[in-house]
Length: 161
Image (cartoon, rainbow, N blue to C red; front, side, top):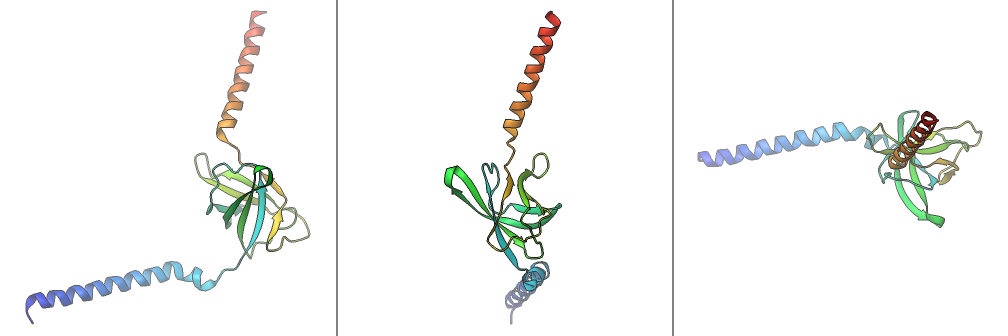
């Protein structure tokens, strides 16, 4: 065999070794969650506004990720029914509430669940009855600005008297 044949064989062996290392790394990173077979269940929550919420956003309870948003459907009266995939180890009771919040000041949206204190558990396919819509920052800034203008006008009138 000449030197070019040795190089080709060497290149093939190196390629196979690199591929094997990548496969092992993928199994180590993603394998435990796939092998664990974590079971989930679905619950629904209906909101008036979901500004910025998208499929795949996290669902959190007590600051811990417990699921994700898997579907959003427009229903009667322009309301949005979301489907939340929740980890089976988390039991939501019939007094649980769901709110759409921002993750930090400039972060994305997420659904924050307050577990509640009821005695009955929401089953697979059940509904979270208590919801709080997303706060739109533009609306909030507009409210703050109008309040400041109103206070400024009152101060101006008082100083003229």
